[in-house]
Every structure is written in structure tokens, then in C-alpha cells.
Image 1: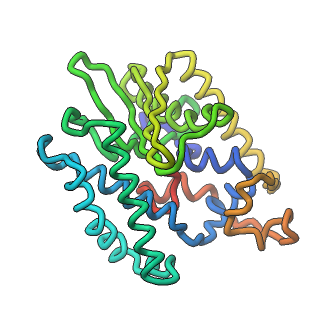
Image 2: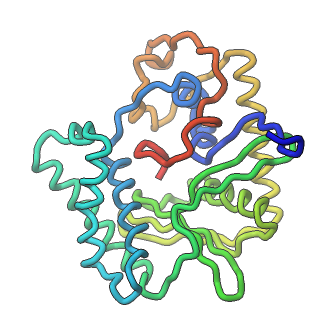
Length: 286
């Protein structure tokens, strides 16, 4: 580190910020305790679909067809399985795996009803971005796609393999995109023109939002407040559970007081997510 390098007090990704907002105890289990979690079929399918869409744009524009995308699916699944053979254990039998792949095919076919990839030339795909705010908090994450118009305007695109949220949950969905927009603004000095969420589940839908500086300043205040709350929990050792419908899918119920469990002693480490893995995994938010 040089004398001009900022001192990093910690870091947040959109996924981990979302964890803390959902349930501080979940954040603790994932980031401080680093407890293992079983990858879900939905999360791994999302990872595979993301990989296919990333590689689809390696092809010349005229060859970006539904058939080409479907042809990439099984090779990308096999690649992921070779990296982690335990993914095979997600399925009870071959029929369940076949149904899982069929659902992934449906998402890829749906993508072509929402965008025409033959008319797009992304400037970046799976772009890792990070920026350090005044005070030393690092924000970082992976942007699925960055489109840059000839006039220089930037569009941030994220693929979601779930269904589009209802009006009551759109703000939560857009937080991740505003987070990325904030990082890009701090990096490049220009607010992205458009944030675009492409939902491949359900009937398929595209959610668009045009941010402005006021939006991103509000997002920065929210992120700083989250980090202050995380620091307070680190100091006090109080990581409160926040029950919700998401508890039904949590791997840590046996350790959660809300379900009669007892969390292990807090390990003597800072948030591991801030200094360790940079790469998106199959258990990250998709």
C-alpha cells in the first residue's frame, strides 16, 4: 500500500448488504462465521443461465440464436459440474435433473422474447467493479452486462432467473442496481443513463429505471448506514434474527434462536466477504 492508497475499513457487495437488510444473523452466519450452505437448484440454474448468456455474446451477432443459446446450456452445466461435482447431489434422479435443465431452456428461450441479442454489442460482461467511498468503505460486485451507446450513455443490465417482483418489492430489487450505479458513478464520474433488470422467470419481464444523482446519493447514505449498523453488531456481538418468509429457505434454522437453536460463539474475524472472495459463486444473489 502506498501513502496515497485509502485505508479500507471494510467492504460490501449488493448480496451481502441485502443479507444484512434481510436478517443481520444471516449476514453473520454467511460473512463472519462463513458457514457452509447447500447450493439450491434455483441458484445453480441461475449460474448456468448467466454463463450461457455471457458466452452467447462471444458469437458473431448473426449467430446469436435461440438454438445457439440452447446448445451452450449443457456444456456450461458440465463445466460447472466439473468444478464442483457435489452439484450432482441436488437431484434425486435423472428425471429431476432433466426437468431442471428443461426449466433452464425455458428461461433461455424467454430471453429472446425480451431482448434481441443480434442488435446488441455489450461493452462489458461479468464486469467486476469496485470503488472506495470517503471514509474507507469499499463497494464492489459483478455487473452482468454494461452497454455503452455511441453517444457514451451507459446502461447497466442484470439478468434475474426469478419472476419479476410486485410493486411492493420493486424498491428492494432496484437497490442492487442503484448500488452498481453508485459504484460506476464513483469510478467514472457519470451517472448511468439506465438500469435494466431482465427477469427470465414467470412470463418474463424487463424492469427499467433511470437514476439521477439524488438517487445515488440516497443509496450511498443507505449503504453507509448499513455499514454503521454492521460495525455496531461487530462491536456488541448482537446479531439479531429477523424472521420472514425467507426463513423457509434458510440453511441455518438449526442455529437460529427463532427456531430454538443457539448460534455458535462469534469467531474473532472481520467480515470475510470484504477481503476474500471476489468471484460470483452459485450461492450468490442472481
